[in-house]
Length: 111
Image (cartoon, rainbow, N blue to C red):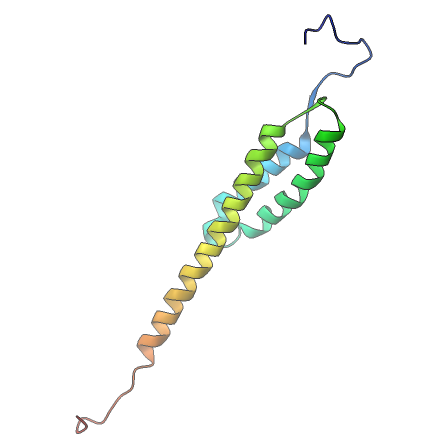
């Protein structure tokens, strides 16, 4: 569509600020995911993504940022997966350390 066929009262397309916020929170969740802090910004990003998606659909093309929103949601899920993987690794390391320290000491005369 060219600008000559646009109606003069149509608003100019604008970048959605919530989509940018979702992307930023998703990126933060990936960076902090291995340190278990990624779950918080990822959760906020996913909650905000739902609202942002509704606004993008309601704007009928006058709000831009669908790609940013999709990438932000993917990054948020990646941050959650990293946090869960870190928890699993820490649990395994903790169980192995506990198992090493809980060995049974027998009397030297016992075979």
